[in-house]
Image 1 (cartoon, rainbow, N blue to C red):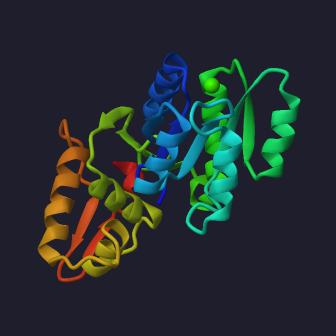
Image 2 (tube, rainbow, N blue to C red):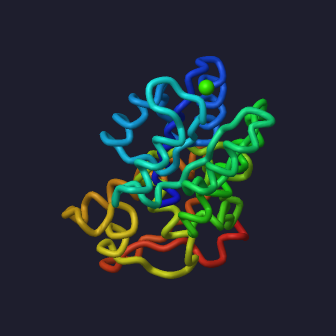
Length: 235
Ligand code: CA
């Protein structure tokens, strides 16, 4: 889950604040939607359930508190993580917010970095696997929050499937993963794929990792699968 891009919906009627926040969250690797009023927010939640909602309390059409009450009543949105934005001094809003079940609140004006930190903290509660933010091995660094990979400090461009493959292989250096296991880990159990698709993805992963003539640390185990070299630190 951590490697899928998490989707955050911002319900905020002040366009400049919404845009700045969107930009900052996208920089962190999140997918972001914007709703300029309460009605649109409810529509967008209906269309695609976000992983987290940032909810301005004072919204046109449908207010933040009415949205919260509605969300908490319905099965699909009962546990949707919500961070409420409130104006300074509006203590009553904050109290009412917690009463209707917001997960956290941030007082305006806020620093985007502060809000991003709150977003991460709330998401970590709903996605425990996000606790681990980075995997490092043999000079390869995989940032599970920003979904970025680097090798010896150089950025490595990977598509999401290759990223999940790398995450799986790096979770146990030396261990041989069968193609079936890798399909489960990188594509999901609901999909049917030929073994060849794994080989193609591993080839792309290798090419990206070895860019610039770096040593190949992925081991092909004939008729078994793939592994990351166990003593790869010497490369
Ligand atoms: Ca507002």
